[in-house]
Image (cartoon, rainbow over all chains, first blue to last red; front, side, top):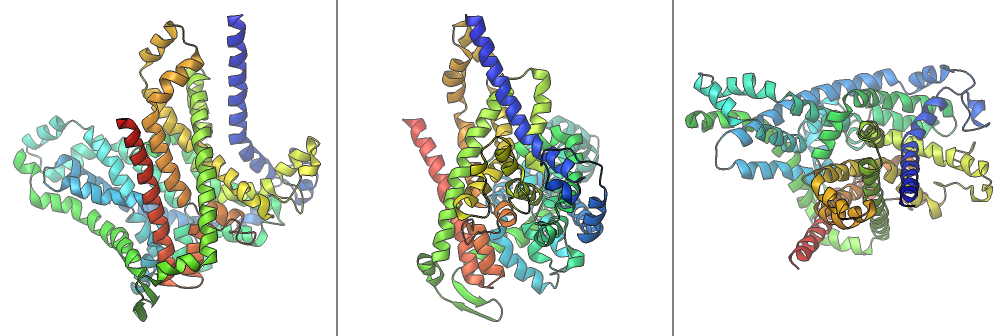
Length: 277
Length: 296
């Protein structure tokens, strides 16, 4: 009797789990399949497989939404911002955790404050500032705003550096390394894991951003990917289903590939970033 | 050794670039935002001190009232959804699955979290669609014989808010599930084993041993849910653009309209700062309640 009961609850659990996984993944499958359908096929069954691989949708979406330009802009902004974020947070976090000075705790709290501020609270003052610097409507405006948002990265890296044994740094200093050499030759190579986490987190944030990119850049040729996608949806989304799905697939693709390769690191980073709520 | 680690010049070299950048573009704008709430007009041109007028205006502004209520509903519905479903998912991952499958399942559960909000919203727009052809949801309803339920989910104010919340919950569950899951993994194994040796069923262990131990994780997730649901933007912007009418205009969307469509710097900042204040107030209420119960 007891054995049977356990078996039943096991089956219920499995069924729930499978439902859950299907809800998570089926929309993606549906999106992917739909991106190959001709427009007429949508008026038939939503669940049917596409009759053929209709690549025309991708060509259409690529042309209409100017995806090439969007990608170029987004890659440019994302990569430069990530490099700067890395530099700022790796150095600040190192000084906070490994060097000895009285205000280190205060500075950490001060930098962490940024994690609690929603982006839209900063938009207006940042807009005015960028206007004064005559950077509005340039990609540098976005790089400036993204790359100074270092709170989360500093917080995560202080966690990683704390796990570095002080003895190793001491040994390198005794061997005659300067503090800069100790940072660059010893601490940095040992923190690659932490750096990857921080970089992935920044990548996801910047690549997926809509609010900041739509506020500071308005001309068509300088749009970021998500802004371009949003404009495409407004213009064509209702009627042109095939190209719309193709455009969504293309915008999701880079994040998806990187996520599938580095999922453990990304999950660790994103959930670690939340610990300090 | 000490001397090297206390080297003032080196410390400055390490912290100054990052700290200056952060101060100029995050901290200083935040202070400005707060300052702006006491002014109205255009900065550098004609920016007049108006005292508390902007705050007074909040009480008579019907649109603000509406978006405040929408945001509260958003907070309540998505927040509850994230926490309950996130915890349920974490339990399933931890207790309903063989260890070798957890990584795959975790990857799938987390998938909606990493994709762009715009893409997720666009996808859900197609799921809720009714014309020119039925979307996924309406097709499904038709297929199982519930055609009477077919409706323009995001096109009528009766259901639009729920539709946006469901899409938002779908995107966020994985985030909370992974945090809960990490919490569950931290619970000492021998504690659960001891209880089941004493004859407790799996459910009893979860209810009486695991649940109380997860308390700090719950508090953290509630705080995160408050923060995240008050700053939501992409989903209502793309899925419904605040409509139909003002049915899904959250504070963030309203702030954007006031600030960047009507160019009211002072009032726009006031709406933004009030949202920030709400976050601070709600999260500190949760933390205080937690402390109170702990000491009792």
